[in-house]
Length: 154
Image (cartoon, rainbow, N blue to C red; front, side, top):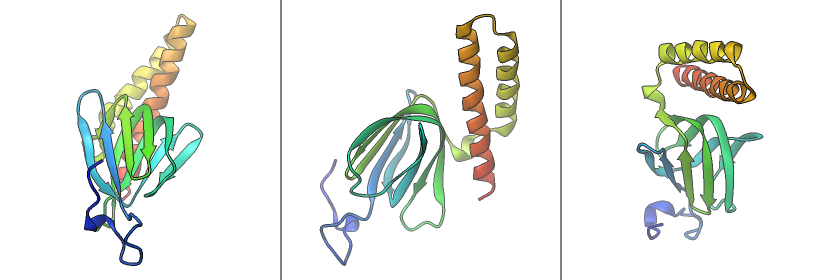
């Protein structure tokens, strides 16, 4: 992490960070890189909230919305991830996503078509592997549709 700058420090306690650096990357590209007041991610057993000075952690994340509160804005940056790995250091959050799509790039018509295809694959599965793959795809596309609806309701 780069050195601490005065924009990170609170007036009450100059040793306490009030923002956290967030990096969201997929195999294709860097989706988000910047400071945040906090981040909410889809953990395996529920949402995980991360604030500055969080305890270090490495865990898997499931398909869903990553919400990033950017300092000085009254809204969250929303990113859909189709699962991946989360690494937390006290003032750095790194998301290594299988797939990541910015909220404003999500396409509901395409997601609905993908859901129909996943449902058809589920119906036509001939092996346990096909069935597992179809379940996984259906879960990811359902989470994507939920992210789209959340993004539009803001």
